[in-house]
Image (cartoon, rainbow, N blue to C red; front, side, top):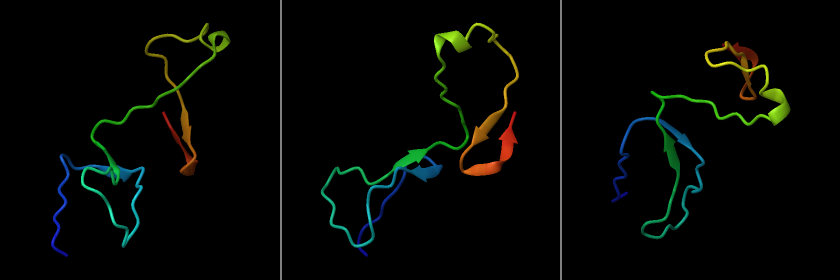
Length: 72
């Protein structure tokens, strides 16, 4: 009740590693914050898949969290 936690930016909490009532140490990482104004996708492809890829090519991305939504 005597602690104020501030974030360096507004965003979305991800990778939360602390639970209600847990005792934490100074400097311990409690969670990560993802900047929601800049979204990107990290994709790893096999060498056999990159032959037909071109810069600027349109793609469709499926996200497990949104099973019925496809992003272009």
